[in-house]
Image 1 (cartoon, rainbow, N blue to C red):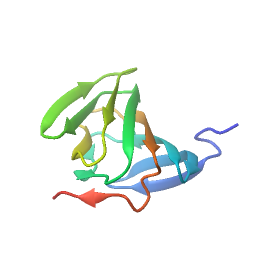
Image 2 (cartoon, rainbow, N blue to C red):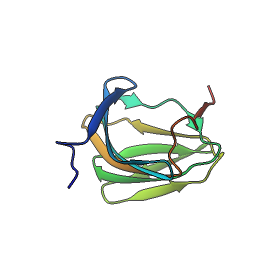
Image 3 (cartoon, one colour):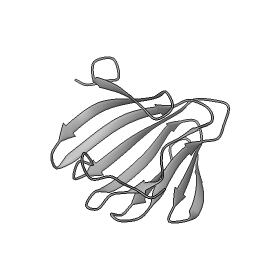
Length: 112
């Protein structure tokens, strides 16, 4: 069994949290938490496709220049090579899952 309590934890960006629930070469599932007023760097992946799924809070998700508002229990798919950025513009924590195939390690290209 895996959960936030026993998964590998790491800090990224501006005090954001990540827990590696599945970390295989062909797939990763990460539970992430973003505090209020934080964002990830805009980027794309050369090979990985991703699916972001909001567990709690509200995510502003920029996908190829278009902003989408994702609420709890909503998700969005990101094809390879498409620039994107997750943002928490609210005053509450945002928690979500990121499912990537294949794993995104060493497959991130910054666009800014």
